[in-house]
Image (cartoon, rainbow over all chains, first blue to last red; front, side):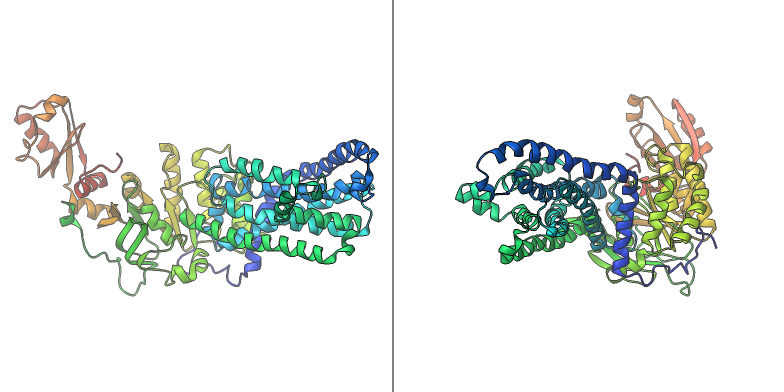
Length: 278
Length: 324
């Protein structure tokens, strides 16, 4: 029997598919397309942190370090900045990954609709895509962390754990942004998202300078942003200061996890609603 | 006016021993206050080729999306392969092939990869899906383009790839929503040929179209939809016999002459349609009607005698043309 002809008896080749394996098909799809740009993407993953750490960590750092080093607790600006940039770049990558590719799947090439015509559910599509974003973030964060170590900017072996911390930070953005992207019919508001959410967070969540130097009101605002917790987590691991306040680290993890969980459940709903509408 | 022509009962052909693959009663779809599909009844039997014919906005796509188990029904009942779309969506979809109106191919993947990944969605092994992909590329006459990107393909090739993709799971029912809309005549004929082959192999085809020639070519049986309702049901031949005469005489006059002719042809035609650009005389003998026109002393610019088509059926049922 060829693939073409099947009379009513049909084929039941899909019986016994678990949700786990249907999610992995969606992941496999994204991976198939990603394979093509993998090399250049990997190259960028190393080049970007190298440029940032060279320019800001070493270049700008030499000025900062020549001043009063007590403000940074006696560490070099490079060591202070590197883990912050790690968390912030995880945020940036996620914001991109959770906007345009989602709109592409739902609106431009409509590949999510193609998947939805098969046994794949809206939940599978959402989770498969988030799983892919997680994998991509892991790659980016690992490359970034390797560069940090090569720059000698990490002072604690706990830097290894900064990789999952950065991934968690990225996903705290990816999940809710995915939910948001699925409600959009044009990419117009993505620009607003980058300009009014991502960029201010990048600048004011403790990446480049301690949040304690902000006015008290802004300090409280910063506390409620996921990037603040991401930066505090990666920095605590890279500098080994996490053991000084383990409770704060637990709060960071819980805060970020809540964004991931709530964001994911919203994403399943908004993507589902979009698929049903057609 | 068309209400009198509605046939109330729509029954599947064959005996009660052949259970219908798709069974709809009072099937309704609403979007807020808007009624897209208004209590339609139909059955599709195994192996038949069934069509929804109607103009844009008649409710065809909404009906197809309910059959495809991607859009929940608002009211009525729908059974597909004796399963309930609300409860068994994924199980039903596992046995459907879907060719949507808009292409949903992945432009980041090659032609062959599009088939491979789609097969994987149905849980097929890599070996199996590779084998099927090669067969289907052959069937869709795309073997030479297997490694190419999707984007540069012509509209007809993309459609053929979409059809190939929809067959990767060896579906029991193939759903085609406006399969040839937007294609040039040559590409359409090539596509019809491929669909006809599938039909010969016993695949159940369900398609929507607003082209009467497509419906005549491909459908064993069809329902005519207009304004969310089914207004007639039958084979193309039955519908033409029931709602039209054997032949049609098309007359073209100069516009100012045409305006004066309303009601003048009642003696020589069973029925007359006055369209903006021509007058249609419905008669079993079109030549005789044409002779009658000349006998009345009228000199039309052109006279064309042709067989009745589904277009005429639609005109009769709704008072409008299919493609406006």
